[in-house]
Length: 204
Image (cartoon, rainbow, N blue to C red):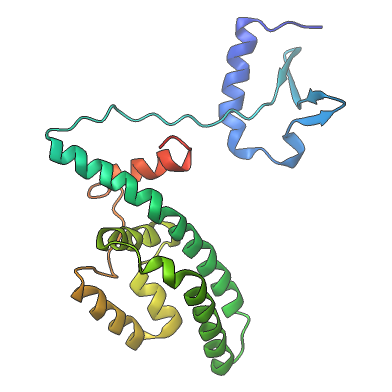
């Protein structure tokens, strides 16, 4: 049996980092009779286990100039925890809808399908969504753009047509929102994007 040397440990760590994004079902540990077996790679006669190393997320320590900034930050965290699950549902539902939508052959079939899905979503989520605050609603609009890859306005326009998109944009503007809002992870939404990453890794 070969024991790990410092060189082996370094190689093990580097291999885990290099190949962590390429791990598939055949390279995952296997449990048998209470013993864990892991895939290996032999390099220059040394046996190196191939183990997926969890991604580590590190951001600079957050500092606040005023108490007001800190309260704004904490409110953003609370709102994110409320809204993020809905953005994920939207991402899944829209992907599912678009896939099925492309299989339909006539406008009548497409319209009937959209109306059916809209009713299902209203029945399941309308009671919850109407309870969102204005700031949470604005955040949801941004998150949909981040998760789906297009604005809420574009989603409505593609599925319901330009008239419906324009109508709901008008309603949103009356309440101080904008369905065309895009997620800007580099500038305006940099801190929010960091919070989302922390949330996704269970660190928030």
